[in-house]
Length: 341
Image 1 (spheres, rainbow, N blue to C red):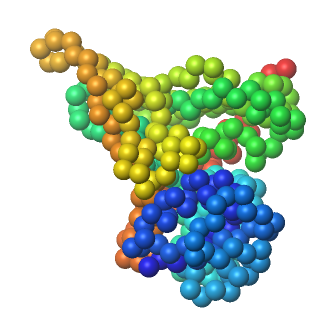
Image 2 (tube, helix red, strand yellow; image 1 turned 120 degrees about the vertical axis):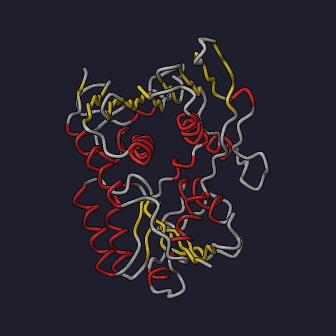
């Protein structure tokens, strides 16, 4: 068993971690959850110790992995602290706010013979896995362009943030999902074009971004906005012979928000109306339009991966260099922010 503890007891821990770590009853034991306030607004997990003393975690030799799920400005501080206490560490995204901080965590972990990694659960989104299946099928021919959209219509969110900070920026908060997907599948780009905006004006929240990553002739675009009343498709894949459009996102988050949890057999699974559409011209000039059944997403695979690394000695799935590249891109993007009055 891999015994773990959480630093943080908010939405991240309870919505995006515990339903998946506690699912793996043969591999994972959640022992302790720390929060400084001691307030418990989520249902308690049976058998778990809740504490307001962080040393309860640091001084417990049974705890092998500490998961940091606090607001991002605290990620570096708490990640470093846990490593210094001899704990392996998993840190929510964005991993850190600066490349130098990430480098220091990786250096410290190597020095102490410990594990530290970013929690990149979106690698196991069903829409992203389905796009990979379509690309690798070869039906559409050579890959030319991929568009990835992560849109909301939540104007009240940027309106409520009166002063800019990295911790509340849309780029750091959401490109950490999509950029990791791009990097994990396509690798390091040849070039990147950044368009990062403050649509509500100078020193307001970063509420929009449009990043173009170039891989030879291939362009991968990562686009997000808080002001999209009608969302753009989650993915659009253009290849020489046609196009694949996946309108809807992975449904795990949708179900989690309804407290419909992974113990349900249909949790997170697309229905036929959610399937993407594949449209192409075959080698004989015939037109085809067909639905593609979605792959099944499963965020518990992150914990499966970490178990395989810490218990069975397998290589880390989220490589240090991938995390460093992502933070470097976030840093560069936020430095080029464009205010609009």
